Length: 118
Image (tube, rainbow, N blue to C red):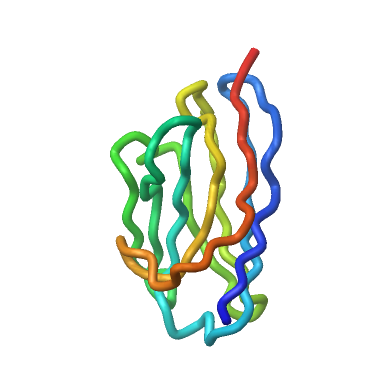
């Protein structure tokens, strides 16, 4: 059973930075693409960024491209999301899952809340 444990969220002022982490267990992390998603209050969950198995290929939603960087450490079974120049519209609960553009697992972690506000 796949397990995702997201961490690193918090309250940050506009223009600030945060780095999210996602610790993964229950499957072979190094053999699958991984992605970050987010869900704002009252909205559908949306794809934010994805990364291939060895990190050589990434994709980003237009709303975060140039500000967010996805990365992974296969030796630690951990996925990261470096978020810079944060905006109030980035406020959401952030989740990770396996897969490229489509989540592979129906189970989700608890996510980590990011709130961007002055």
